[in-house]
Image (cartoon, rainbow, N blue to C red; front, side):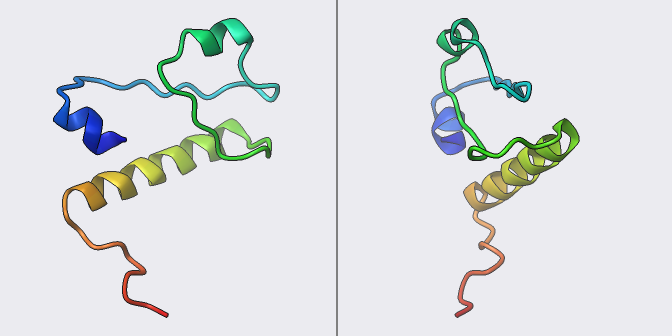
Length: 73
């Protein structure tokens, strides 16, 4: 998805972390894309760290760096 956005000229992306009960239907309707870390409820600081790690990993892979577990059995 990030690679597609980059190649499509998307200049910025905003990631919003919802409250424990998630987003309202109105908030969801206003989003271009909705993603989740599953059904678990995560503390905001943990969710922010997980999002940052996933974005770092995705941009590293898009840049051609190998996945850190590639080739392991």
